[in-house]
Length: 301
Image 1 (cartoon, rainbow, N blue to C red):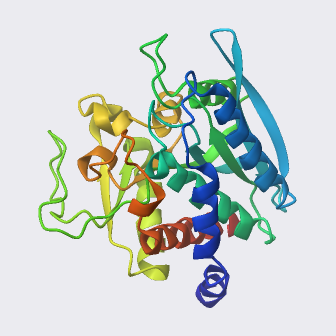
Image 2 (image 1 turned 90 degrees about the vertical axis):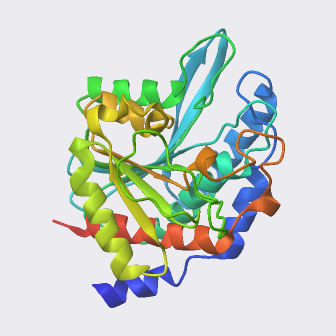
């Protein structure tokens, strides 16, 4: 199994990751750049369709406009109802080209989908690009696309064994002191911002450990820092600033994979969050870790 996974991981392409970021990067705030966001949505949809996946659009109504989550499905051989979901939001903050936040996550999502779509697995894997993760001017709420998705999944009694959300996974800084630790986090955090944070709640602690185990075995060069937040992250609000929180709120086991965003990246939510600032070696390793854990989960009977 290990050598088989190694062979699969060797097919992951940094060139494709670069291309996906370039095509996703650009002003695409939900309200301010609606047409541009729709162009990015079409690119993501067309790319997922090019992998011969089953792709659907989930309409997300917001203040008289229709947005969309894009969901691609790779059917498992067992046809059971215990799904695995990999997700990332494709919109960006107002005024930001959003290379790290979150073209990086979209790029890893697309490359993982590309690799996994060619394999026969026991369990069904879904890939979802969420809209309207970022704050909009008409409401204090955010995570709008994933909130609708998670609530609808719960209504339909859809079962997810694991939800993995990619949130800003492209920025590193090897300088001592470049990493800031959020208030109330009670674990040792490296001072250099060159690791992947794996954030879980109580229900997803097992998946967090599973992810760390797979990553250590298959991508030992990737430094991973796991953290289980108490009370669904309510006392550390920053741990709820991405789409995994929508799934936590509906009782699904979900992880956030993150470079820690504002706690490391000085370009976060600014006009300087650009392609040139990203670490593609790091993104390549993140993609390998994600693919390895999905292969392990989806290969189980």
